[in-house]
Image (cartoon, rainbow, N blue to C red):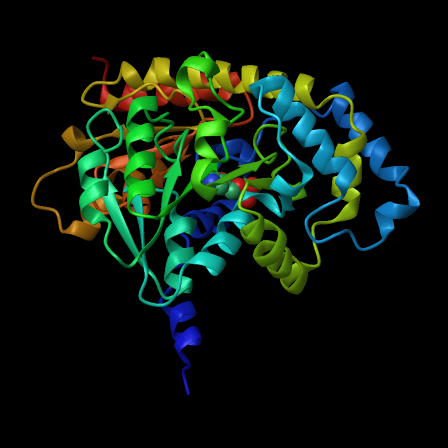
Length: 399
Ligand SMILES: Cc1ncc(COP(=O)(O)O)c(C=O)c1O
């Protein structure tokens, strides 16, 4: 017998990104350009990388024992110190929980808030796992397309909210667009949410990968955390440690954090690895490393954008943050293709170039984006980006 929950698992779509990654794994990495997913940017000769390895080797006794489910206090304090220094916001130990990356914070939040039959409102294109998590809870994802500048459609979001809306999820900087939603539109969404007694979840996986003036671009954390809203962040990309599986969740609603989330973290995973928490709690290089990673990503963003924006018939906006560029290839897609052929057309063309270039078809991020592809620019080197850019330009022509 298929139970309701099993049925939800069956209905949860497979990940295109994972399937493409599996295809790529059998190929020679040196002979392809892999824009498929964002793994990070790390220099193995760099001092901080070596210090990290040393720190792991000299783990303290406590680092071998179960942590408190919400995370080691010394690590939470360290993050709060960074937040105070960088954002001028003072939070308490009771406002922060350590999670296994951002994805875990998002999942546990939907587990706690989304009941069967509820809906969650979010802009499209979206980061696909968020929608899948909603499906897993038996909820409905109500996706609202962004405008031509990839900014929020505030009216659309307001209209989508009804009595069954459990959450609004805002991902900024965005994946796949790299868009930072304008502060005034985020503020409006926040007001609408408050009026409708709906919580906003801010997925800020790329909070520390912003290429402009943060103070001008980003909403203040104090505003975001109003009304028991939730902010979800991760070290995956900002420190280039996607495999460590560590992030954090901020929320001032004590019942949510200290009771519900604590319970869920305890009963599902007994907290996050103490080796990881202890190492980062002791590390003295976090800010240095974040800045270094950000500047490496900026160079890569600049290089890829330079090439893609010059290609004939391709429309693209310069990403303001994050690790991705989302480009519209509509003018290169023949008419009269079936929807499926259309969605995979550019993916297949790029895969068959003289050096195969792997991207993710735009349809993976929302049904209106069949003509787009996502490129993760965190590839191994600027030279590789230059090479990919010139191959693309040679094939499609110059503007
Ligand atoms: C928008 C967004 N949110 C959350 C995450 C979760 O990242 P992690 O679980 O590695 O911290 C990702 C990772 O790619 C992402 O792109």
